[in-house]
Length: 375
Image (cartoon, rainbow, N blue to C red; front, side):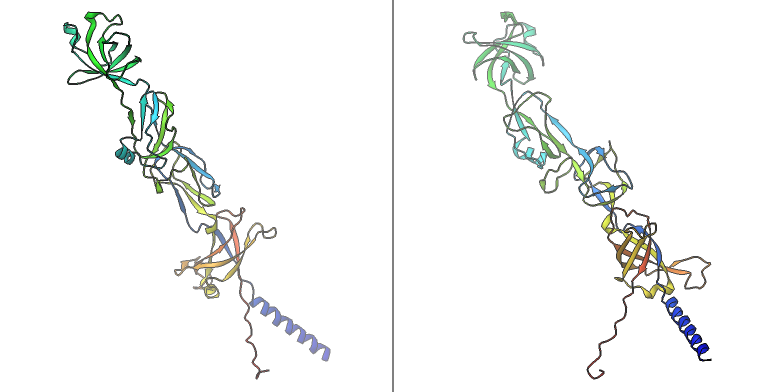
């Protein structure tokens, strides 16, 4: 009889213990990795996108190249020597032009110009009609030892201007100007004075991204001098053509593509930073008050919970508005659920949309310390 009673007592204790364990079953929820925020990577200046590197939904690291943005090249209008380069990279071309007259100047190889008129021209009607672009020949009045060639480059109210393309003269020297290389008397179209050719100004618009020459450089006509871009460069600092990602994460969307123009501030791509990844999951109303913001959680990858696929996290936020769950739920409270978001530190294996199992961690209650009297 005693043995039977003892056996019954053991069974009762086992059932009681099992019930307690069942009642304290660990809560778990299926969640999904979502982006906590979206950051646009913007164009630092306006220009043509010559290369776009990332694709949508791809992984990008901080410092990776996003794209290259090209500016406008400004070319030398004449052959000569660069002088009076007043700008530095990052400056506004217009502001430098307003202050100094141009971004830079070029002293032309053809260093003389002649201000001519019909004075002393042979008295023949066609000699009084000088044409732009006409090739002419010069000889110094004094003794004819200084000879040269030129092109009529401008017509003025009192005469015309000849750009000397060959030969040597003295400044302020008087020369006769002819239509033929033989310099016959009847081909003389006038007389002029030798002056120094003015430096040729080179202006620009926008901001200077890159200077390609320096003072004293010899340049050919058509050679690139500097590159300008649209918009004011932040801090008057000229960045590289390459735009780099400031964050590590997933490329959410590609906003601009190769061959398109971008204005300063335009979004090039949008990135979901990895450090903003969260796990979003739903909890029934009946579990809502078992969770608190800041509460620690354990997270497991649904497909890999044994090979390092576990992560520590904490509840970042709990929604204050319910969403209606399946109508087949057992009770009204089960048919209502709330969104919860858990933050964690992802590694390279985590991808947006992955399924993770969330286990809220409950902190065991600690018994209050006994006072001396209670002891």
